[in-house]
Length: 145
Length: 228
Image 1 (cartoon, each protein chain N blue to C red):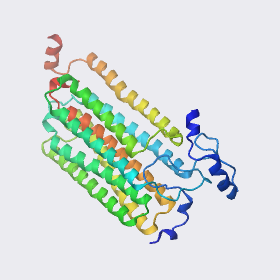
Image 2: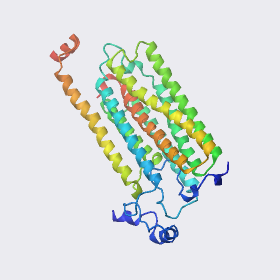
Image 3: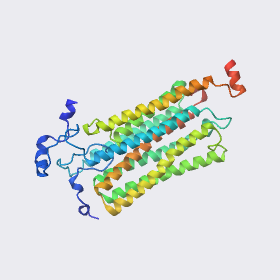
Image 4: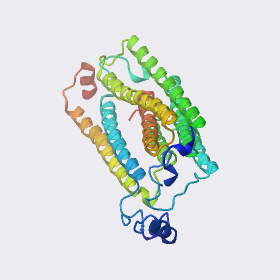
């Protein structure tokens, strides 16, 4: 199947892949050549390597005894957020490009709502739990103890 | 903002001849000054907004899970049920599939039908492997009498992780559709826009899995005294 038989994609800039932004405007000079293969592959390899590293770190943290116990959950949360950041930058290509401003703003709003929903629920429900009548004898003993 | 104006993708000297040839007015983009953005940017933005709404839906399931985590109703706890070897394998499958999906997008950029199909096939196989492990785990829980109706904790667990699994299933259907469309219709612009949305979807699913394996599985198996 020849590439030429499929319309005028050459009119457009290199437009495949997972870039949210990074396109050229209509009427602008098209960049028919794809971006340097090596650089693009390098970016994905770096992202993949960092994600693997952070995943291994997470599993290590969950098993280790060399970290202060009560801090483990927070440590895992931090590693998870870091890995999400790696995915956003290297795979979803959320960047500081001018073309990407809308995507970043939408992301910021999404993060705000997610934080409100998750931390708000935990906060409110923890307080409600404290005000509930104890469901079991065991809980009653714990409260009195 | 002024520095971003300077970094706008095309300088006016590059733009004018082409734009004049096309009979269009000169454009300065990225700041709403040059008319509407290209279709590709609009498609990506629209799908990104959908993905964020999906993430917000998942966040409410996460909230429900973290609130109900300790309500096991005398049934098995997370620490007794979760098998981290299984989780590690699932993570390896999904993370590698995200990478092969990125490779597919490079292949599409290079207009290589062969490598596009190979990379997408690898993505599909890894995705099926992930789903198989997940279904096996669910079956094991149900066989242990720890189905979704056992306790509030397990209801929220199955809702959260199962919802992610349903997303992966839908993603696999979409993926095979994209393979067929690339094969039959070639690298047409509209097909590549659909593929852009698919890659965004697949990468976003991996982001949600990062939250699930860290905050559900790893935090869930910490010793009870270490839980927040």
